[in-house]
Image 1 (spheres, rainbow, N blue to C red):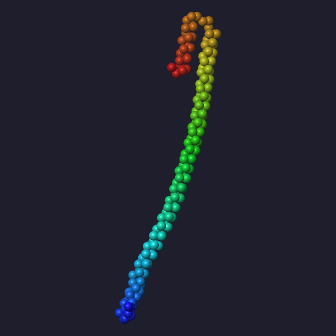
Image 2 (cartoon, one colour; image 1 turned 180 degrees about the horizontal axis):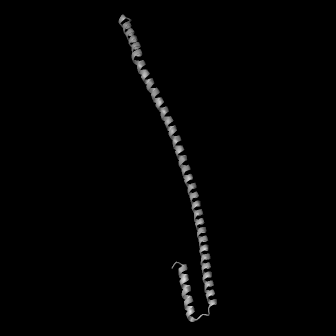
Image 3 (cartoon, one colour; image 1 turned 90 degrees about the horizontal axis):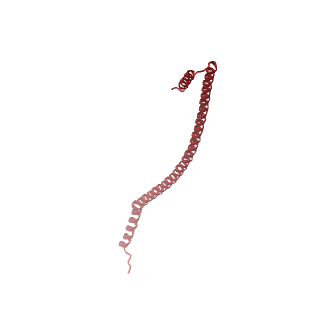
Amino acid sequence: MLKLDLNLLWTVVDVLILYVLLRKFLFKPIQNVLDQRQKTIEADIAAAQTSKTEAAAALTTAQDKLRNVDNEAAARREAYEKQADEIVAAGKAAVEIERQNKLREADAQATALARSMCEKLLKHNLTAQDDDQLLDDLLQKAGAGNGN
């Protein structure tokens, strides 16, 4: 059966001493390393989660800015189109005013020529030769007035 002798007692004591020494010099340092690794992993996971949250916030901000840029571009385009329409309208108005001025000048020149011709006709008794001379003078004045 089971005998209790001194060898068994020394074996038990040796095993207990070995257990205490292993626990103190092997298991605790290994447990400390494992605990440090666990803390490092948890810190890395927390940092990754924080980075993920910051990246999502940055993405949202960038998308908002992009939408704002699109809206701003549309508003500027509308403003430029309105400004261009105003410039075109002002140009058309200026052209119309210039056209009216040129028509008045042409009317004034035609009136002056007609008046000059009437004055010459009323001063003279005209002959066929005078008619030809007046016509030539009229054509020369008309040509000089148009820059020809």
